[in-house]
Length: 246
Image (cartoon, rainbow, N blue to C red; front, side, top):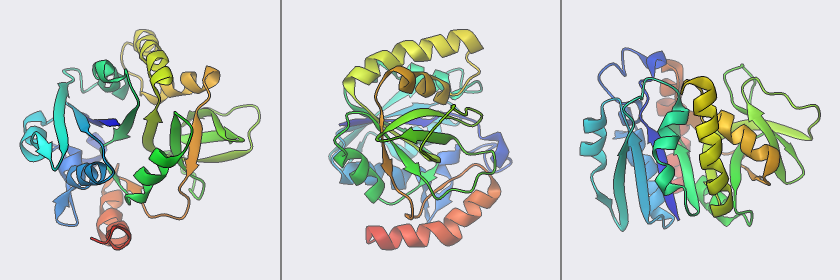
């Protein structure tokens, strides 16, 4: 299993902290967010992680390097990183040819997330937290039985059985990966590259069986705002470190 990590964006909502620093390099627990993520991936046996870089790309390359333990680190540049995240994932389309993890680089999480995602029998699956509070900022995942039927911040299907917040992690099987490349291209063409990659994921689940893995109750946070960063440092990281034995 390989991984694609999206760490190209400018993260304007965290300015001025991110004016000259990539968001994934902000420290939590005395280390960059990205360092925690790469260590977790190496610990579960991921062979190679491809980092899609843009904003402050040289900083990311310097800190992540080319090898962590047995895991190789490679890079793909997104020169249009100020536009939508759909472009970042499309830039890594050459890696979407085999089972791969697709991950946002701004999440503090326990390694149990990766263990559960890799353990689930479904070739393709998302991590979902059903204990979320809906503020309008969350990417919501709607489920029926063992599959995701729709996702997005503003998408609401006609009927569903469960709903939760997406973590930003996707295990993409080989069959889904081949379809996803075409859907990313479609979303780029329709939005001039301004859309987010979740729009392509929403199209994918309409015609492809994609499962979901429940992580409700486990500590984690995505970091979009200064308050998220404070919470990550003061509240979430101590719980994650305890679970991981750090």
